[in-house]
Length: 441
Image 1 (tube, rainbow, N blue to C red):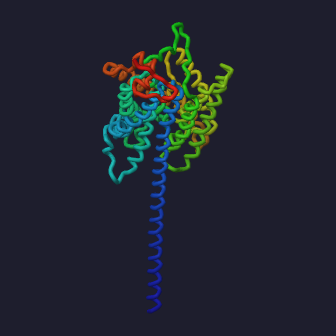
Image 2: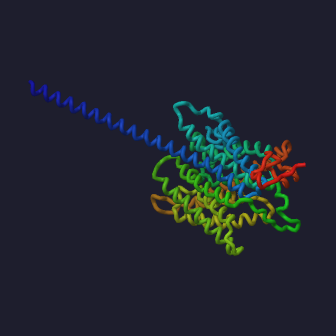
């Protein structure tokens, strides 16, 4: 009898131990999942902070490539882009871009982040990552209309860019990343980190704005000659490019929004494409002018970064180099083309972001690589549709909005203000007071 009781006790102890083991394994599995989630969120936020740092890069590039008398104005516009963009995207833009939609054209819920609650902090992390992208798109326009735009007008346009122009197209291409469901996504459109969603939208809006505001005084002669208006501080512009390149690792690698095995490929592609673009831009300008042009080389780096942004997660390193080489050539001839047709773009924003955003998006489909079968699987039609839709929407909506706004607020400053510089007229100060003297009547 005692033996039977002892045997039953042993069996119960074994069963209890096995049960505890199962509970322990289940608890461990949940803990691992929670740690992975926390790491994903942390990486997403770190990437957002890197993209935010790009605002400084844009400010340095734009002010360096323009004249000293407008440096403060450039910085103020970049500062404003994030201030206005953050509030506007919180109130309206995020809902339009990522809210639930029944049409596939824009979201209709989540205004003022009303779709967030205390138990859903991923919404906040996702918003933080997306708001810095929104500000990037708005900032692109700043460079194309530099040195002659009314600051009050720009404030209003920047708000519209952040709440309507950028979010509507973003909803078409990226809506399903949250609660939306855009029509471009449904046809297989590829744009991993925003060659078109961010850069071409900003670039084509810049083209419309540059056409409407007209060239800077003295840029083009009466007989059609093109006059160079050199930037006041190329080392500052170079600093901006390096800052942008650094921030781009957050832009591209962060778009995975997870700390997983896809990150190394994205990082490598984000390195190789701009490196190749620098070399091709530098080579082209050398054969044309027998000089190694620093301005074109710097814009070559940015063109390569824009070009690889759409396909950084779905092309191989070899194809990223090809994308970069072509981007470097494109940016040179694109800048020359827009100068020839008298579209004055002081920093090359249209060529870097608009033209190479389109190229990068097409390239993402052209070199689409299946890593399981190790074969190319080109996607062309949806890419072309996306590129055309971006141009029609961004250029068309910007053109109409600027025309309407110009009725109430003058888009361009007066001739006197432009000649004397916007820093003193708009902001009452000079960027370099010990070296600059501005006399006002």
